[in-house]
Picture 1 (cartoon, helix red, strand yellow):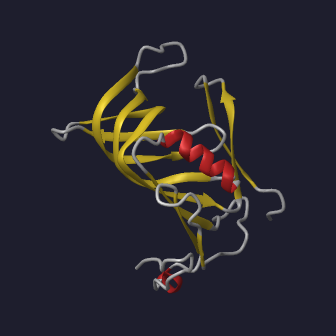
Picture 2 (cartoon, one colour):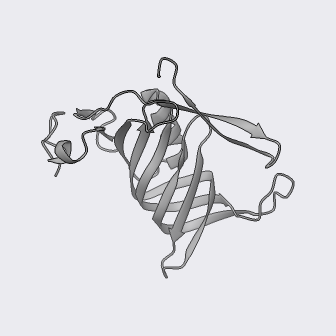
Length: 191
């Protein structure tokens, strides 16, 4: 499976298996707008039913900051319900909020500065990213938490981003948690 060069779509066989997908590739490290639009799309999502899925691939290179790059990608593509499906790569630093953090206890933030492999990166992206990451150090020990920022790429970050085509993500303050939490709604014009 793969893509032909020159911005055309290669036949992957996925169109028979996954008829509800549209796939787009983007590689900011090699070319700021390699945009390969491919095939599959499903009917509009219902408010209470499944949503069509668009998939984007993004590669970031050494020195790029992951969170800002993701938010810029989302803004440039005008994505309304984006999320990180997967990410592999490495970073040289990260700022994470640990699980004991509350709105009133801000002492559980760690600033890491060493080379780490990205074991996992998942979460939602809209005007504010809500991402969680797991990182492994040179000995394979892992650390993870809520991404605050400073995720600087060491060698590469290969990120797959999905978007629920019939939905819209927003954030609203939740008095129960003290944090802005995800609000999901159907896009205007969808049934």
